[in-house]
Image (cartoon, rainbow, N blue to C red; front, side, top):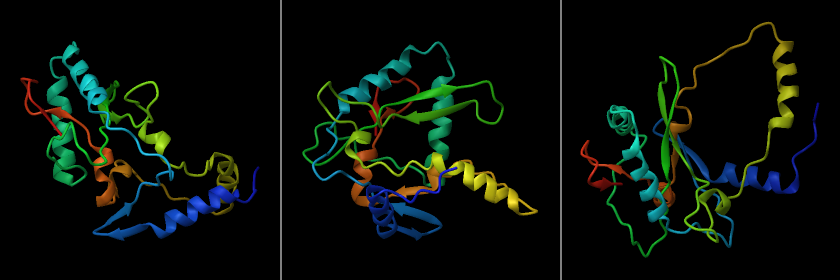
Length: 190
């Protein structure tokens, strides 16, 4: 069991998080923690190529399933359509994405955004451009033991919990993604 304090870097990351996170309209808003010398490159081509691979799916209902999820995300305010800008001069990054299908009645498909994707061999991904949070896995054992000390425990359904964390407006352009305008899969939108 590890009760080690956080390293200097981890303590700084936690302090930065505490000072750049706020709660409004029933959601937490966070900034992205960019390394000082690091920005991801515009990777429209990579995201576009990943999107085009969806056309090769053998599932004729894939677009419909995907669109239903995105429509729900728009309705819930998790995402919003933006103007497509493949050649922006500003700081912008497109996240490639793909479906993960599983044999489940509750979540037969989910969309995975790939922040580790690079636009080329010498480019940086969004993940590489950001500081990482402390690894709390070593603290799980002590947390479980503390949980077992009390007579009652609570559980909760945290589905879509990460979707309720909003990216600060000044960093939203780093989290863009592409999709098709309609089922013809000919026009791309962001």
